Length: 290
Length: 164
Ligand code: FES
Ligand code: FES
Image 1 (cartoon, each protein chain N blue to C red):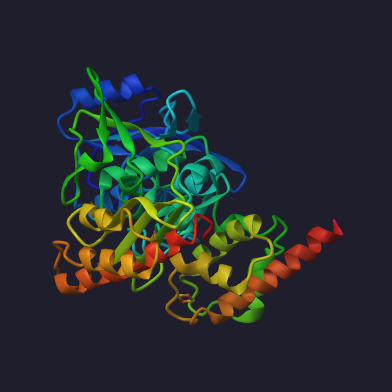
Image 2: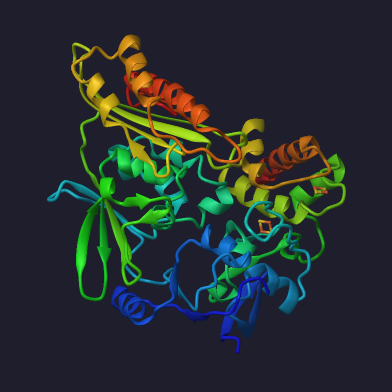
């Protein structure tokens, strides 16, 4: 027996889930379980109540809401499903490539988008991708529903902007964001490990090869996945080519980076610069990458 | 006092009904309560892949799922991979021929993972096979014979499919 004892709840409706969350002081939501289960097995966390949301109806679809211009993704959509969704690929071409880095195929069969966003590991791929695409998250409690921009989601290291009585219900992406190219690269010692650093970029380039809009984010470098507005601003109005990418790369290196027992802040800053440059290179070649 | 639930599931084609403490993970349930000790537990935090079983056909880590979550599901463990008459699964046969195992600790997880992988990817490249087993640690073989066995089994399975 690995986990400490807890009371188990398996609501079938969102309302029941929210009323359980409102009632208990010390409850944990069990989504795909690929982070929470290890932590419970090792007894790093010992919740009094575990609320399993795998049976909750209405959390597992991906659908295009043309009227709102949004692609709506249920919080319980599995990572494997994200990789296979043509609708998601159309709105966010980097998803198959980025999610292929999440764990292994066996963990992607269980792991969910909502679980990944709420766990908020600084090096996780899905928070980075959602930050880059200006996703909007729907968060609900028994009494209230509100939207949180992905830019406001990460409050601090592994701390998302959600209170204990709330659940993440849905992630919405712009349906037709109009980017002409995207790139995603990461650096890890072994396949399937959390990356030491990762970078994602989106470019909107006009037919004279001038950058109209740019989005750049890095993961694993700082306490939370981070957009780089200075580097983005440097690109706008410039030709999409090596000198502009080098300037953005230099700006990326100025990020306030994490230092831990394995890698120094200086090393992470260097990686941020290199990876941003590579991701921009991919993005300038269009959206049609592996 | 432990919270207990009654669950009903199918394990290797057999219906099973019993009580389980809710905090028991599926791997411990299969081994400790059902006595199916073919499923191995290495790390119990999702790193090694030894505990892999099929849940409704998907390869998943049984240490990262609660037994209660298997209620109503179809589970296949290593004990259910061979035919009922004892004929080995093509993967098992190829592992035996190609020396795809030494101590055998990782083997149940390798076989269940590869069974799911080959169903979805019947004609894999060597790189795809290596990627598929990248979440399964083997401390003995050096992986080379495992990759060879997987490719051999895939070729044989494609042939039998063709004959049918
Ligand atoms: S025992 Fe489950 S992954 Fe190691
Ligand atoms: S055969 Fe010993 S761990 Fe793989």
